[in-house]
Length: 256
Ligand SMILES: NC(=O)c1ccc[n+]([C@@H]2O[C@H](COP(=O)([O-])OP(=O)(O)OC[C@H]3O[C@@H](n4cnc5c(N)ncnc54)[C@H](OP(=O)(O)O)[C@@H]3O)[C@@H](O)[C@H]2O)c1
Image 1 (cartoon, rainbow, N blue to C red):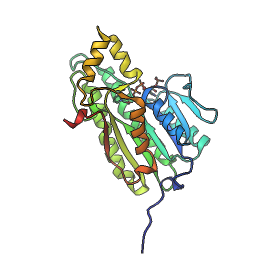
Image 2: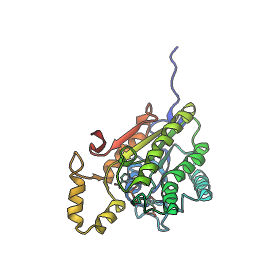
Image 3: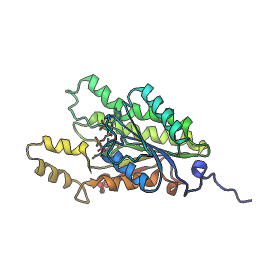
Image 4: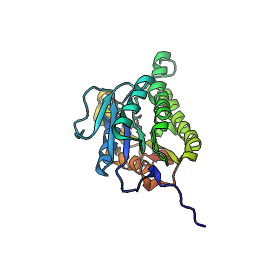
């Protein structure tokens, strides 16, 4: 007898899917929201800043808050479910950059980096899983090339993004019986406010930008839309047999 796998999200692949996206007020998350918008998904977005993204449509919702505050995460998921119904996909794009030498970074700052890049993502998974549609769905975590490769003065970011990869792999195994897929995107240098702010602080921003691009086999940074395309794939039914995978989107940086 032929057995048929459960249909992801319990819906036809063409149905509008309910998608919660964190970090959607800027950069990669904003581009991810635009990509899901273009496939007709119903969106619930979040970021820290109070003002909603300019692209927000009247039928979409944006809730501002700090994902390091578990009470906010609970409220976010509850409002998303009230608005959309059960979730089909959860895309965790939020995070922050923090550089500093090992002997220089105060422990409070180290703790903030781990909270914002790792523990807050755990909180999102913890509260979102019970809100996902019976029959399955997709979770995508946004790690980094620096979750796969170390870099001086980035050790806490390395630790957080590397931890995120193992959080995703463990969650993929734990949630597989529920047909909830968990995958990890690992972008390389991507043109977003996150990176641009760092370039502007350099003595010669253009020279710094060119030097960083020269370290990438494809010879350039990614556009946020290129990264969003890969994240969208992992979060869509097109990736229905992929779980626990780490997808570098880094122009070949971690291939070496
Ligand atoms: N750009 C890159 O080169 C690159 C490379 C590899 C990985 N990544 C990862 O990709 C993700 C997005 O980066 P990006 O470049 O798009 O950065 P970005 O433009 O600075 O956007 C970061 C997003 O995360 C939100 N956020 C940060 N801390 C938060 C918190 N505690 N609670 C709730 N929201 C929070 C920000 O909200 P507000 O702006 O409203 O405060 C913003 O929406 C991050 O996880 C980053 O580590 C980026």
